[in-house]
Structures are given as structure tokens and as C-alpha cells.
Image (tube, rainbow, N blue to C red):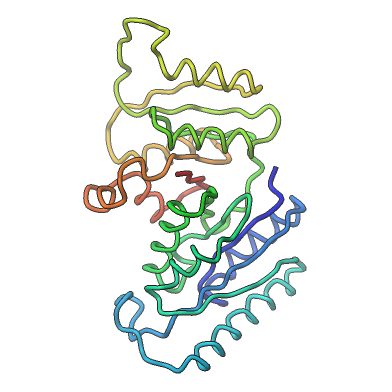
Length: 274
């Protein structure tokens, strides 16, 4: 059950579509909502981040942070929502660390697509930090997608601690009678002993929790992130859940990975759990 939601934004203007979707959903769920507004030092160009920061006095940056928070508070009032708005201001390179050290506590941290952030680099670094360090699942909401009532979910599955934690979160957040498609990409292995089948153990566990589950195998025919999202959209699932950063973050960056690709281009609500 979702009772505490933390939304992340970096600008009081570009975030408007995301806030509308988030606040409407929180009102339906009767969940307490906080909005963290992240105000960086102005940049010569957003494309240069984390470089190219101007020097401005602390009082001027603090004034800009108050203005950003006031814009968000006005949006909350305009849409009849209720949310606690607070902010952090710093050099763009330090804001991810500032957020981590603020130790926000929530059932769910929620962020919008790249188009609802002013600085793409900041969004990427903030979300990576949240996934790796917050201990809280991250939900990505594409524009026009409200926080879902999770009745049907797709779980990208491979035997890993991250996938297991993602499974537990889906069960925790899902509605009674949850349907779940357990999806593995690649050829189905031939097992000598059925008792050694890790997927069978997961399916049995889910069924004990009252989850209606099916295991689907997809051919390895392209980028896993695109395959999983396309499958979830075909199934009209409310949510795609993925264990995030099963490899090291450095390896994901240089070799590519499901986490990084989904962070950039979520096409439906996506739950990322580390």
C-alpha cells in the first residue's frame, strides 16, 4: 500500500505535466506527497552539465530556489492537490549527493520523463543515485501516465538479487488478485532436474501470495529494454518492473544496459529496484 510518495523535479515550469499526473494519482490514493525541488547553479548551457556553471552568491541562488519552490507550490494549489514542497540548491554536480544525504523516506520515489526536466544530465545522475543509494524503489512516469493501480504487471526476470527485490516490491504495491507476467529474454535452458529451476520456485512463491502468474520467454532479438517495454505495452500492463543495475554502474554505462536505456526512454510506468 502506498502512503508516502516523494516526487523529484528540477524546475517549476517544465515539471508541470509530471506534477499534474502525480498529484492527481496521489489524491486518488490518499497518499501523503512531498515534492523535492532541486535548484542548480545557473549553467552557460544545460548541455554542458556538469561543467559551465556560473558563479553566483549564495543569497542569489537561495532566492532562485525559493522562486522555484513557489512555482511548484502554485501548481499544487492550482490543481487542488496537497503536497509538502521542499528544496535543495547547490552546484549541479553536488545535488545528487545532497539529495542522498537528506535521507528522504517514502514508499515510492517518483520522477518524470526527460522532457519534464530542465537539465537531462541532472535527471540521469539524480535517478542513478536514487536507485543505488536510497533503499526505495523508483517509479518512472512518462508524460500522460498517472501513477497506476497495479492490477497487471510485467517483471523482467533473471536470477539475481535485484530481480528478487523487484518481485517483492511488485507484490507489495500490487492490487489484490494481481496478474504478473514473468519475462525472461533468451533461450529456455534444458534442466536436468526440475527442482533446480529457479523460475519454478519464483512462480510457486508468487502463487502462494495469490498472484496469477505466467512465465514468458522472449527471443534475444534486440535491446532488452525495448523488448520488455514493447511486450508490456502489447499486454496492456499497468507497470513494468525491472531489477536495476544488476551489473556495476560503470559496466552499464560503457557496455549498455537495461537500466540506463529505460531511464532514458520509459514508454510506460516503470518500477526500478536495486
